[in-house]
Image 1: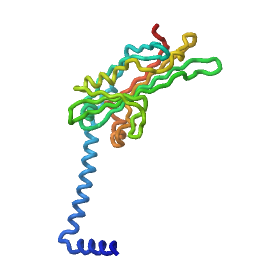
Image 2 (image 1 turned 30 degrees about the vertical axis):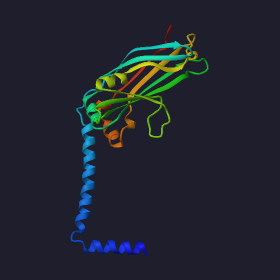
Image 3 (image 1 turned 135 degrees about the vertical axis):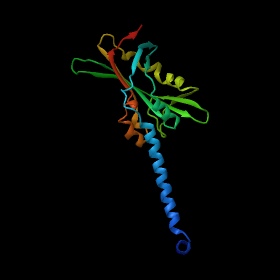
Image 4 (image 1 turned 180 degrees about the horizontal axis):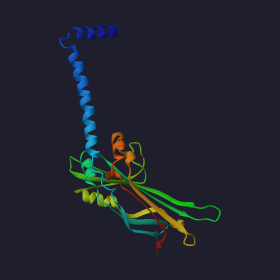
Length: 225
């Protein structure tokens, strides 16, 4: 009975309103404005000249055994494109992934995977404090993730990017994983993970050179004494 009365009242109100169509038209216009605003923001993030891919270099990669663990240190070298810095200031979070894999040859198979680990880094800007935040985790970031994340804030984007690029004493495996009597190879892959961007940005950034930040390097595994 209450539902019938409510529907009847609503119908009566719309019929007797002086401008019933005006409210519907305003609602449609507001929805279109919100959608167009989001599209324009996304286009501003991803529209940039088609320069060459962002060059990435790797220096000082070394492995050490301490106690029962195998650690890696290295420094990635690249410049953050201005379009990505602007995207950060407008609320876009960037995710970087470093993957390290150690393999060794065996006589009955081509390669045996000994170690495979990942380092996930999340970079974003905090407009209220005007500071840059960097979080590091061994697992992909997600609202339901139960992994442990280490975070620190920085005053400038240069300081924050320094934390993104520098890898210090990253535990990649057990000390016993290193076999100097076998031919072991280490492969490092680094990239800006576009899959963790909002869907509209994923589509546009995939064709933009400024968003193409990646490196792959393979070399013989050598452990410092």
